[in-house]
Length: 323
Image (cartoon, rainbow, N blue to C red; front, side, top):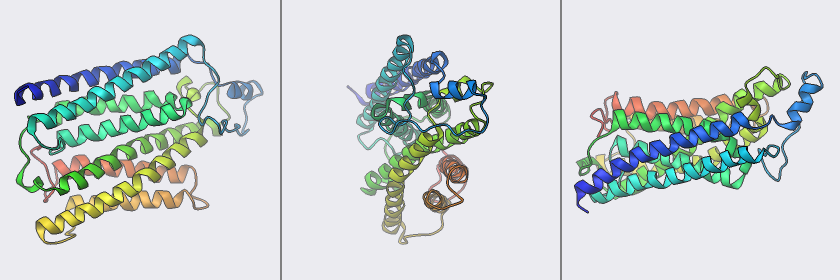
């Protein structure tokens, strides 16, 4: 195939991925909407609610919920299948893009953001396959994924082309690849913390029956906190390495390891926030909701770094031209 044909195929696979993720989101929504309220919460509500603490889920299956009717389980299987096929076509977007341009497919904002979202989807699929109860997070992960993909396609898309001179380095494969991995994992961690804040408030009210059915069908607050923490633990050393690799690349390209360029500064701020979150998770008085808020701030810093710093601020890392 010619480069133009490969580029066209990449664009088609991008649209296909958005469609598959959208269908998966609908299927995950159906799984939550038609499933039963967890039995342990029905018992609590029947007993009058109150401030009683909900029992933790079985350690053998973190986040596991009581068995759903066969029709609901089918919705879950269909959703996972659609999300998996979507991830494969999503990977195809980057593969064909790289083949068309004869380089690594993360040389501009469109490619970088596309790769970050793919990592987030893969991270969720791995979690859901390891612990089936976590499939109930699918709606809350895939919905932001669809929104992100649509925004990437509308506002960040550029035609494939050669790398700009500043990126023609072997460090691209090291620094940018690890930054993509770290950001994608932090994306899932941040969503888990947002859901933890919602779910913990629900549980503190004793499983209020007037609350949203979607909240009732979420994994327990303890499970969401565990997912947020473990994914952050996984992503933190990757992000640390990305920052260090970026400093080494900066010395090679610009003759200094650190210059407080806006991108460098906000990457370091993100590192500090996630270090604070991991410390807070082990500190009395900061466990639970305060630590979760720190993790949410970390995700906000990462998004700010990707969008505002890259596209609006001026500096050696700015990509105001979306390329």
